[in-house]
Structures are given as C-alpha cells and as structure tokens.
Length: 538
Image 1 (cartoon, one colour):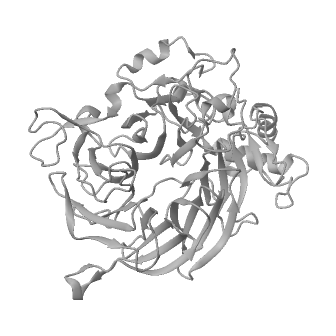
Image 2: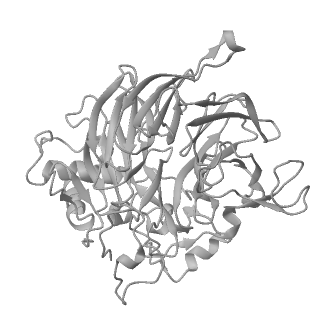
Image 3: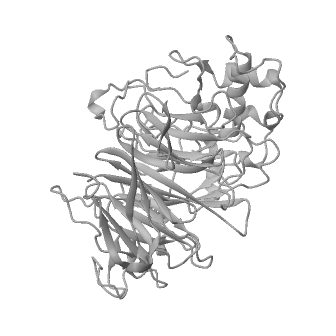
C-alpha cells in the first residue's frame, strides 16, 4: 500500500516509514510508481510505461502494459452517467462505437466497482481511476532502477510481435523486452475482467527471460485470475551493457576482441534508425559521458552494442557532459545528419553514422546558443519538423522553445544553417515534447517537469495556445493516440478524438489530454490513470 507523500522525485527512503507487514522489495505489478517513459503500441490500444522507482523503495523499476482503450471507455462512460453529469456529455448519447464491446451499464459498473473511479476533488471535470484495473499484471516485468525513455520497434514480418528498448540509468543498461501477442487481440482483449479471455491472458506478453515457458509455472502467477504478486525480472541476457571493441580508437578496455568495452554511463535519449531495413539501429545518448552509442535492433543483446562515440561536449565542474536528446534530420536516409543536445553546455553537436555503424563527426560539428541567450546551458529535447528543414528545441535556462532553421545553405557548401529564428517563453523545466498536426497546423506539445504544466505552442505564430495543469508534480514524457498525415503511422487511432498521454512522474499518474479541435474539452485534462501518492490506495 502506498503510505507516503512524495513531493520530490528523489525523496530519500529515510523520509518514510514502512510497516513491517509491507511486501518485500518486489515492485507492484499493478501500480504506477514514478512513471517516466511512455509509448503507444501500433494497434492504438495499449501503452507501454516504464516506472523509475526513484526513491529506491523496491528492488527495481518495472515496465508495464496498460489498456488505454478500456481506460478511455471507462472515463467516457463515467463522465456521462456519474453525478453531476458533464454538460458536454448528454446521458442519452449512445455508447461510443469504439466502446461497444461492453454495454453502458457494464461500463459504469466497472468504473464504480473495479476501476474505483471518482471525480477530482479540485476539478470535477477530471475523472480519476485506479490503475490496477487497466494494467495487465501478467505482463509486468522488472528492470533496473531509474528506468527512463522507452522506444518501440515493430516487426515488419510479424504483426503480433514488436520490441521495446528501455534506457535504465541505474545499471547502466539498455534493456530489451520482446512483446509477443500469442493470438489475435481483436476479440475484446483488455484489462482483467473487462474483456473476454483470449490467449493474451497467458504470461509473457512482455518477455525478457531466456526461458519463457517458466513464466506460467512461477508460484506468483495465478492462471485463473491472470494476476501475479510480483513481476518477472528481466534476465541479464536481455541487457545491452558491453561489447567487444574492434578497430576503433575509443576502446576503453582492450582492443581487437581483447577485452570488452562497457556501455557508457546514464543512457538517456533514444532514437530508432529505420533508414536501412537490413540494419536497423538504436542510437542512445549518455548523460554522464556525453557520448552516443549505436545498438543493433535485430541482434541478440549480448552482441547488440556496436560502437560508441567519443565525448561530444566538455565536462561541467562535476565531470558530467550531459548528452540529452537525439534527432535524425532525414529518417529515410542511412547517411542522415544527426543532432545531439547537452543539458550542461550551450552547444548542439552534429554527426553521421557510417555504414560500419561507427559515428563520424560532421563537417561543422557544433553550433552554439550564445548569440541567442546569455546562458542557454541546458538544452533539452530536439525534434525535426516532417520535412527536416526546421527543428524545435527546448531550453531550460531560460525556459523556452526555440525554432531552428536547418535548411542547407548553398553559400556554405550546403551545410545546415542552424540558425535560431524564433524563441517562445514556456513553463519551468521543459523536458520532453511531441510534435503533431492539429487542426492542420503544426503544434509543439511541451511538458514542464517543475511547473507541472503542459503547454501547446504554435511555432508558426509563434506563441502559446494553451497552458494545461497536468498533475501535482513532475510531468515527464508524452505520447499520442494519433500520427501525422503522410507520416509512417505510429499508432492506429481507434479513439476518434486526438489525445495525448502524459506521465506525471512524481505524482505516479498518467494524464489524458484532449487535443481534438472540435471537442468542448480541447486542451484540458479529462482523465487520470492512477491516484497521487497521498496515502489513499482505493
């Protein structure tokens, strides 16, 4: 049971009292606990969430599988039928077609008794539900401490398989997790007793152990209820941690198969490079060392770490280099220019990845922010517009969103201009952001960790369209239930309204933000998965 109020993400364990009857150090399988990263499944129904275990209460973090469709149906029904009913929801409106695998009465009963939904005390238009009703317990796996970014790679040869990669700062490692849907997920799959049981009920949908057959025989797993009291820990064989260094000057231990090179410290930003279908790669930035590592997507983890770069940035007084975010200018080009930011330097570095999977420094390897800001020493996220001719960057010192002209300059050997054209003031500690076409216009959706806000920024005006209070503390990552037109789909949009899902790290919740232009609740939080760590666990 949750028993402490966590006002800061890094609150010391000594600040709380644990009852002697509490469970062991196994993390909970059905509770969010400092959720950090989030990504949507291509089918548009499930989200994958990494939990950081920031206070080290448990023996590790977790990666969980959440039925977001069932959660959306639950809050939609609750908003219609609970008192007071929302003015924007007519109780006589038929159940949405995307929720027709249960009746109105079944949904409201589920909301009241299974999900234990309630209206937010401060804003009754927000419906909060207990997350245990929507997390597939049989799929929760345990990873290392301080799990962060999570990326999904579909399998073009198997529509029922995909691969997750999770950056774990505490090991350090990049943990690989295979997602195996053992059968079709179209026959009402979902969370617990919301759905008609199908083969998705079997353990191992999220799989990171060398012997998957043992999952069903674990004493913690109940084959009748499909619940488990503790998550299955990922095997060491699923951790990308070291490699044999060959013909590279930056080997840290041994040369030419004579000793292994370790993964650099604090893996943080991650981008999947799909430009070459026969050599798919994952690029990872490292906060501690300022390096970028190259990981093979389609090879075993023990052989996946292909190379690592030298340091891109000078160290700060504490020795940190701060490589934060990565961005690929031309996702379809195997020789695309890449950008990497630093959260301790006013610099953005550029590089390319050679066919031999070795990182090479670009011709003009850096550009600085000193001409725009007096400091500018904390560059966070970096995302390209769809055509690669413009980029968007968040800066924490001062808090702002920057628009960067990245077009090639014919007068300078066709090198990118890399000129900051606009600056928009945003909320405190902007960390991550997402770009989407909303109402035919490009919007930057920025999450701000310290101010607990989400800002909708129009980079074309430029200016802020809306400011949204996401939760009591720590919005960190964001994903969407829709993709941009003309871009390779990330998700199949089952729910017609455009929604964003935001992890509230310190509050241990996931907020649903309505971005649909035609909706009366546009740019508002309409629901929360989970309850704050306030001592109440329904």
